[in-house]
Amino acid sequence: MDKNQFDLALKVGGIIVLIVLLLFILTWSGIVKCSAISPYYCDFYDFVMGSPRVLIVYGDYGLGEPEVLRDYLRNPMGVAVQNVDIQHVDRVTLGNLKSYKLVIVEKARKLSMDQLIMFMDYVNKNGGRLVWVGDAGVEFGDDEVRLVDDEETAKKILNNPWVRVKETDTEYKVISFDEFLGLRYVNNYCSEKNCMDNYFSVGNLETELTGEHPLIYGFAPAINFRIKKDRDFALVKQISDSYASNIVMTLNFGGNVQGSSGYLGKFSPIIVTSSMGMGERIAYYAYPPEWFISDNNYSSGILLKNMYYGMLGR
Image (cartoon, rainbow, N blue to C red; front, side, top):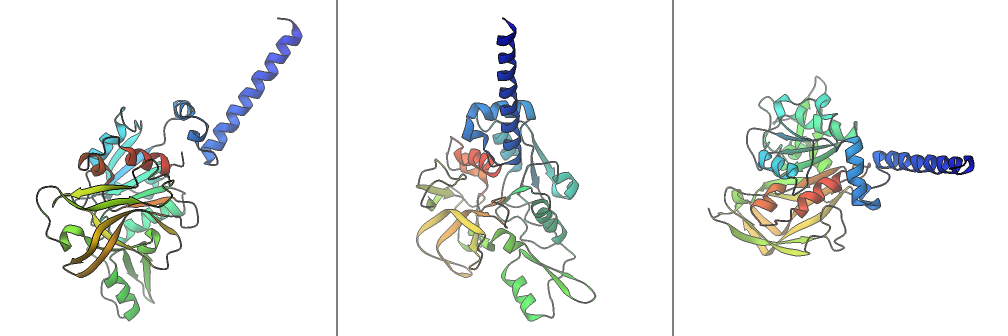
């Protein structure tokens, strides 16, 4: 090889290196999805940079099986996530959360106001991505304010357990986790209806009309949904004036449903995203993601893959 050929090869090699570095920067910043370039590029990017770290946070009881979810995410035949950790909520701080690109909260029915604030700060102040599952956080902490003098504040608390109040010397500080999710919690389905011990159908899952949202892409437009008494889901309602939330999957009951507390409606949101002005960094799953596979025979695990790749903007 003469000098001119060597110089040309050096320049071409330099250009290739610069292109790869630019792609890495654009991928790291979230401007470009690795899957938009090539699935193989995602693998190469993860090999060099390490796959995004995921943390599953759980409590003492509630909807979900965190260990099962971790196993599905780690399964090399499924999502094949390399770095999935699991931790009890009482051992988690905001400093811990900062180490993770994606945090999933399930089986955590009882959470304190301070814990809810911690997860809000993880998203709003640290740019984290959060998946909230089922009835997480619908029970108050032991020492929280529940009865207040202000009528409007009291009404908010009574209507939605995702609203919490902190009392100071001069005022009540309202923590609106409901607006953060764009949803109001109603109840768990089997607390409203008499559920059977064996699996039974409650209706059809229907995706949003375009079918192109990352969390449901490739999923059938409508598919039968079944549960049983101890494998329940949460009933929620979208806050009517919530401009930031987007329902991407709905349960169609097939008719009007009456529960023990009154009329529940014909539809109930199952997957909802919320942007809070910074992209869709929050997703709510009324039904634990792992149960889509284990209980409803969605063996491809497409919704779980979509959750991982979609929430990470990949």
